[in-house]
Length: 79
Image (cartoon, rainbow, N blue to C red; front, top):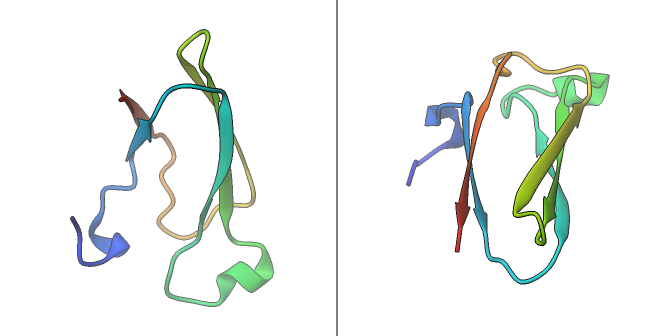
């Protein structure tokens, strides 16, 4: 575990899925330091799990933020 999210590699996202049913949630991100989020500098990634297909769909929106990854590897860990 990291002591701060600032130390994490933002280009990688590990999603732990505890199967059994469809699910969805939103991941909110900003720079974690400034109040730029008040000026719409943030990103929201919507994650939607399809249990039948064992598939994760993602969509992102927002203006981004300083230090946001331009590409991201998402690794699904199914439990």
